[in-house]
Image (cartoon, rainbow, N blue to C red; front, side):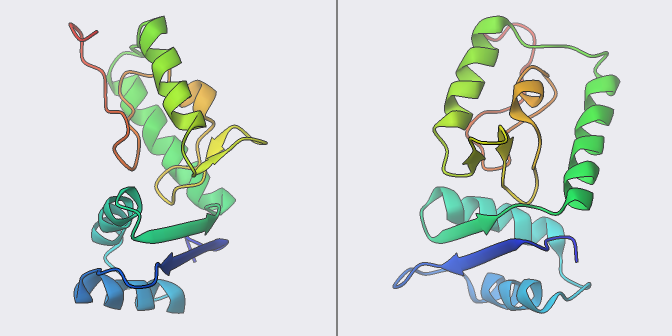
Length: 140
């Protein structure tokens, strides 16, 4: 399963949609028919709002696939990098996030798992829970 090693729990007394609860059950059961894009978007939204907890890390296969997509976007943008000030701001944000694995320097989110020292340098990348976005020329 693409999320082996991850545990997602809904915090006591909070609301999440019935559709997402059904997706969470499918996630826990390892259902291959799970609408992964919808599940991941709402997981990030609910995590930012403090409605769910995510523990563990994506599998090595999932990390490789996520990083591969990031590399393709990076190459498609001619390898553009962010200014040093943006890189520092991004890594500071990552290091303050609960999903940041300080020992490995990686993100534990299901849509990431990347080595953040590299990912924060690339203009084409963004945070999977929306803490920082892609960088476009002309931004500061």
